[in-house]
Length: 90
Image (cartoon, rainbow, N blue to C red; front, side, top):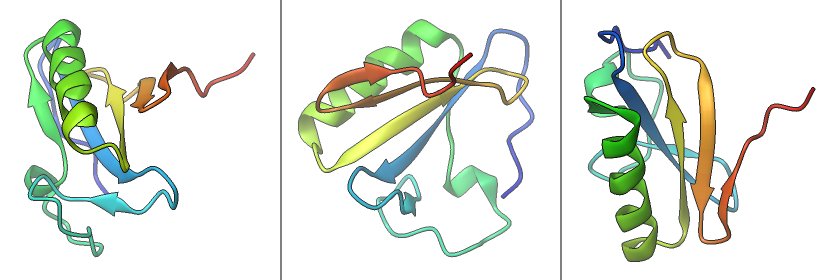
């Protein structure tokens, strides 16, 4: 899957099923190796906007988790019904 090309300070959000890690498109259908990233990533102008979206989304759809990436495609955080986590360990 190609990462979206973003402007400075923009963030993208990827939605996956929490129990399986299966990636979903924005319309909550299963992603099946399509090359179209517009169907997979939600794009936001800032991290704050991405986080607000994710928190509301998880409240409505608790079976999912959302991963936030920065404009370079670097992973930032995962949010699920348990809160958030940083998967990267040092």
